[in-house]
Image (cartoon, rainbow, N blue to C red; front, side, top):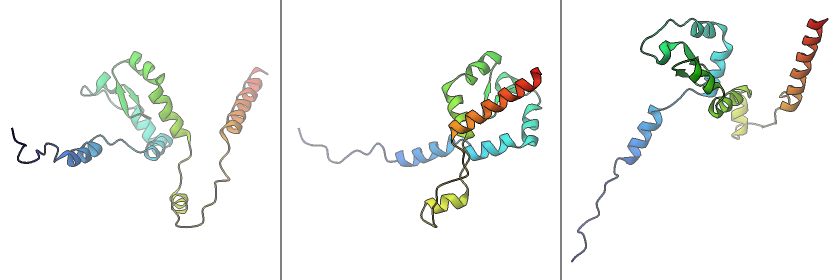
Length: 140
């Protein structure tokens, strides 16, 4: 029994397929989602979306952060409790870097660490204190 005459090449288009899958399933970037969530016109437009029979749940149950449609209220509540949604929300809460900061970090300028960003512990304490003060004012 001899050896095979040549090497068989079964995966010659694998790289091309990977690239097409990568672009096919591409989702929106975090800064784009954040910009849309902060724009009241877009939020109002999404909230007033008419019933669409082609979308799951007739298009009524939509998560703007994850860009997903759910089939009913139960699925929407389960999605809001999921790890995927919570991670996405946490990622959206971080302030996006500006182009200038990205260029400086890449070595195209003098990089200096951010000084205007408040640490999360301080931010959470300030928000909690504001909520307590607001509740006390309402109670009085």
